[in-house]
Amino acid sequence: MSDIEVKGLDLSTPDSIKKGLNDIVESQKRLAENGQSLHQNLEQKADDLKAISRRLTEIENRAGASRAPQAGEGALDKYVRRDGTMRMRGETTATRPYQNGLLDDAPVCDWQADLQRAVQQYGIVRTLSKASAPKSLQHCRDLMERAPDTVKRIFADGSAIGAEWIPDVTLPVLEREIALERRVAGLFQEMSMSNKTEVLPFLTAGLRPYKKIAASADDPAQYSSSSLSTEARTITATGMAVRAQVDEDAAEDSIINALPLIQQELISAIIDGEEDCILNGDVDSGHDTALASWDIRSRWGSTGLGGSGDHRKCWDGLRARAFDISNATDQSSAKTVAGFMAARANLAAPHGVAGDLVCVTSPEFYLTEMLLYGNGVANAAGVVDFSRMGPANTMVTGELGQLMGVPIVMSEFLSNDLPTSGKYTTSGATTSFLVLNRARFKIGRLRGASVEIDKDITRGVHELVATVRETFFTIDATSKKNVHLSYNL
Image (cartoon, rainbow, N blue to C red):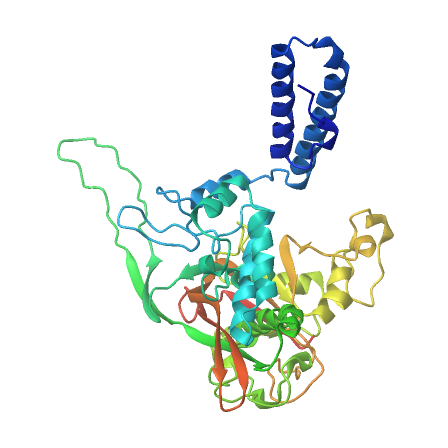
């Protein structure tokens, strides 16, 4: 019996290689049965085996290089249910508490983060476009085909990799990006709220200790006792909403191209509105009486300012709080380190010895005054003592992380157009900074950022609305001096 032709073997896949190996073995068996010498074919078979071995190694190495395991991918096992199916979104069962899903949990690896962004894009594009968003769906499929084995095996065994496992619009990525980019709001601890209005019990005075008197006779006196003093704070969550419009005839490609810009604008609007209100919120316009014309750094435009829908009426901010507790100072003549320390001293105890004090300043005051403070300069017109300059000196680094142990945070929403009174009653040319104990302020969050999409058939557009429900409040009494405003700078 003649030998088979191994030169024509298909060596493109592991399966074809295995078949080639089996063919060689069967060929040798047939030769032996026919009494032919194995030695005659040994050299050819050795070459064939070497070629097959090299090819198999190449395929394995390429597969390993294209899908090398990532740190954290092992944690994807936590999304696998006991029955072997994949938990795509968070859920609570009768036997287990709430557990996050693959698409709404904080990603444990780059692949999961990429998948969440792709699913978010697909959900939005599918809603906005008349087509079924095939390109966005294919992007999701491509990611699933490159999934770690834990996930890929489940999808391959359970169902097709398609739209059936993608939920309706889910935007955990948007919420995380908003949280990541928060600047001033990131200074404060968050408190979860279960209802729109909640009453927060608060301890105003705690128990006190007394000296323990040693017993010197029978029936000694009782230890002295003390009582707790409590109050209650009523906090109410308010909503902020940002709306964008997309034409109903937009094609999938154009939506995909514009989507990053739309999402970034939604994020930016929420973060800027939140920060502006934390600093400049004035519910009843009792301080900034010209709110209707106050467009800080041309951020908000000229329409809709000062009305009931102005975002600065969601809650009273830090500037309004400082005026309400009579803890605002005209410091135009004390723009010195001593003046800064005097502003700090105006705070009631605790004075932030545990690191809770923070200073929020305008860019103008930071750049023209505070960077010089870091060198011990009396003011902007002072003389720098170069003997105190070193590699960490602000004259070298251009950055001042702390001043007298107080962290410095710069915000564009402490503007440079205030009158000398520090209140926006008309346009002016001064600025300000705040010193506060951030531990005494909280952000109550009823619901994080979410995006809803709906079609307005009367206008032929899709509406994208991003909303948050939260509030900013202090846990202190109404007269507690927990923030100080230095103005007319």
